[in-house]
Length: 289
Length: 256
Image 1 (cartoon, each protein chain N blue to C red):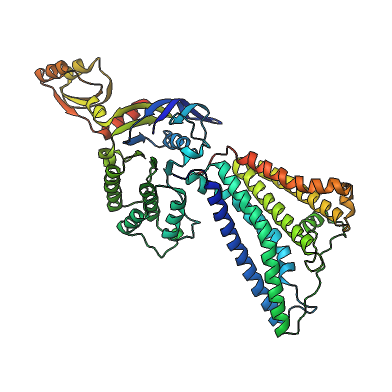
Image 2 (tube, rainbow over the protein chains, first blue to last red; image 1 turned 90 degrees about the vertical axis):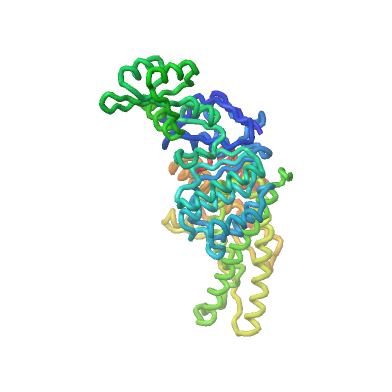
């Protein structure tokens, strides 16, 4: 499957949810779609899942527009923070309903996950707690095995052990049944190890799309004497700085060349990598300013 | 991988669930009928299930029609296109309009036979003629919309079933149309759809009365047309409603 997004924009009456987005996803990987609240993550994913149409630009899956395309829509699953307050069915019946429409759905695996998440089979889904309903969404997404599976902040309400089961199952199932998985989240520090690629959205714009390792290699904190640090980073993209007495630490975004690293060490500066969480916080902070 | 028969799955699912609800309503009405029988709450004979359900069907199919829009997000979430949902829901509705009157008639005849054999009750002829009017304009319209033309299945079963089917069809469509307008647009558009539906249902009822040679209230007499035109218009109204629903839901955004 190939997803191509070109100059995609989405406008509501007085609000631009997405502005001129461009990217392409071509491999069966786990993609982390990061962004602060209101960044446009759900808007983008809802277009991908044919819940909505863009205002301008194009989004194609295998060179075809997904909206109202029966072949494509069947291959995209969009799991989000759905409210099951009116769902009178019990979980097995609901999963059978999903199985009816999802050709790759693995009922045995779904039942295994029901047991792992300890979801009650004798209760109507509307009586499930928030965390249980989220686990149900996870089960539908994992056992559905659709070629494009989107989890939009699907962990909401799940406790830490349940989220841990989700992450482990996600990695294990992706290894056995590789597909394109898009994880939208702002729980970056907890989920970063899951991502192969990262897309960062802010204020409706795509800030970056990088491989996880490449992205991490682009961030560094330079710490040392204030004057030396300032001199060293003056031509670099600075995303954050902190100072304590005469010691200053500056976070930069951009790949350091080998000679720059050597020069920094020679000047007594300390170079440390940045976490995805730090990059996320400071890149979106800078953009907001 | 089967990809193109989703509308048949939607049809089957929608048909079965709505039929299940209809059985639920019939069960409730049977119980009410029995309670009235046991406690002698009706002096001049007992309404049979067919007559009772004919009236209740107005509300029942309207409500399930309203719900038809709210099934759309569920199916789009399962990868079904809006078009396939529309096709599936339409076929389910057609199935319901064909099957439901027969089931109700059959159940009614069986319960009548049982009750008449074990009690001294007889079933009365319904009086569902609404040709009189008073000064209450709104009340007249509401009454006119609820008590639609009725034919006893014993007198002409083909006509009776046909009228019942048509009633199920147009009242369901009215509910579906109104909820689709509320879903796609706003309250104002929804209210507009209610107004359109009231007009269409009123015209449908007048045309049907005209074809059946039943009295038509004076205030609607201007809607009378020759029988040939009335029959065509009678069929065009539901088709028009289908068209409007499709237009409203064709590219509708799914609310999350």
